Amino acid sequence: MHQLTLAEIARGLADKSFSSEELTRALLARIHQLDPQINSFISVTDDLAISQAQAADARRAAGESGALLGAPIAHKDLFCTQGIRTSCGSKMLDSFKAPYDATVVARLAEAGTVTLGKTNMDEFAMGSANESSHYGAVKNPWSLEHVPGGSSGGSAAAVAARLLPAATATDTGGSIRQPAALTSLTGLKPTYGRVSRWGMIAYASSLDQGGPLARTAEDCALLLQGMAGFDPKDSTSIDEPVPDYSASLNTSLQGLRIGLPKEYFGAGLDPRIADLVHASVKELEKLGAVIKEISLPNVQHAIPAYYVIAPAEASSNLSRFDGVRFGYRCENPKDLTDLYKRSRGEGFGSEVQRRIMVGTYALSAGYYDAYYLKAQKIRRLIKNDFMAAFEGVDVILGPTTPNLAWKIGEKNADPVAAYLEDVYTITANLAGLPGLSMPAGFVDGLPVGVQLLAPYFQEGRLLNVAHQYQQVTDWHTRAPNGF
Image 1 (cartoon, rainbow, N blue to C red):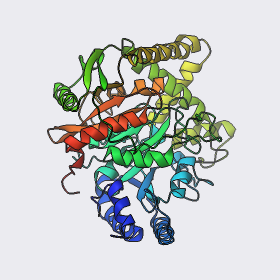
Image 2: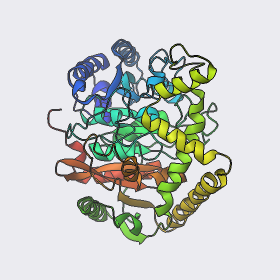
Image 3: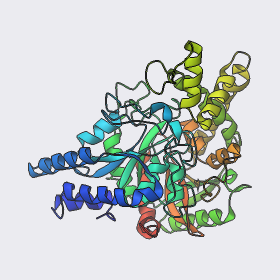
């Protein structure tokens, strides 16, 4: 049963091939057996999962139906879950049990999903490798010596290892799409404001967005359907009707205009990845797509702009963790200043401290105009580039990452080298656009992903392109050895 996709599980539950409880118990046993190899879970919620599965079975027996009713998933450990530890991968929140459910968690629970647990992540979602977690690094199921990407590496590794069919994740600068690429999954970052951020512990409020990680575009469509929608509790949520994402999956790609940005295929891209990206383009051409070269001239400024804006917002958001109200508190503080310093110094890891320092500096008097304000102006230029490009194309395609998954620890001494791995993904966050990564092949046994970007609220178009591509390729069906 562990090889079933969400869509296959929905059909199996509907025709009573198995019950949600049977499936849940099988997957929980698999998690306990195999997860010690990859460390993808922070918390496994056996009792909650079984009770939710039994409730889902009862709802089906009473005549209720639904694609997600009884489907097992897991949540990235920054979505608040009532009465369950929500740690954000940090010592700071190791003992924090949220008193409420995040909107995403509540909506999916209402749809009947079964929560198997909370997945590992880079501390406060800061990282591209899932190595900064207080609970240890997550390993890539395709090669246990390599990283799975981050910050949603736990969700990605768990789904790739067939411990569960799908999981929630978040994307601030590529943290859904990059791990999807490095673990051969489909991952979707929706338009900013499409999925509620209420109850999602913030890293960078103008960039963070929740979304689904699964093996197929069809599964991402099902999970996004349950997550998306306006939320009056979230001031950044946009009141835009949510379409039926599954309804457009089989739309023909005949005449679809796909733009290839020339800036994405220059120095820094592994030529083996470039070859697979061009191979995917040829498959899409066979399906009727029309390819055009385009230019995004300001993408070269994306990394410096992002690594001013995101740390600045993190500096502000993480100021609440002071050892006074909740979270980690140092022992025997001498005075209030000592309490602040030691609680934050002991509770936050090195990567989080680094970004807080950078962000505080960028926001300080005398530097705000020189750094933060200038970065926001560059952000607008990047958005304008995309708006101009989408006047002539329907979708933009390119590599998700410039390199293959690297070995655990390989880039720890040079944080900037890890930051550069986000070069193709962060522009979607800066502009607020939807983006999707889909499996496109392997190099030396390691997965490669292709990224698709679309205009605002065109998640259905991304899912349609990915689904059609997955009808003529089998990259998404392959499983890592041993899992």
